[in-house]
Length: 167
Image (cartoon, rainbow, N blue to C red):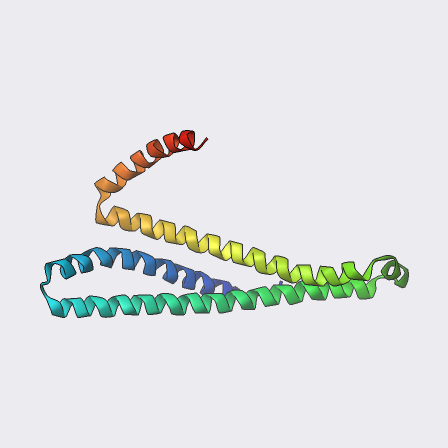
């Protein structure tokens, strides 16, 4: 593969930044809501609103560049795979080409593109969601460690009866 590792590194940084914005938003939402409810310090509300707008803008920009880099990597992978398939077809004998159905050859070119795009989407989404889960879980521990430990103990206890009721 001829994919530059810098693209992968930049995409991982974009995923990390995108996930961190979720944690920052979760961290800032509680003080902001408390200040709105109290009606005090109106000038601070503008500051929090500006920060939240900047965070959402950062999330949008990082998500956009992450998609661009993912598309670039997918196109590179597709072109490499199609080139290998093309060279295999060119180097094969005429009799083997005539014995194969032309639809299978065309279908192979199309399926390479679809499979690579799907796999890339699943991998990137999985990594991004895993980073987001880690960031939000660490945010939970930062805000209230005792409550986080209680939640970790109670959630499995609550899931077991739900599974029994589901059946």
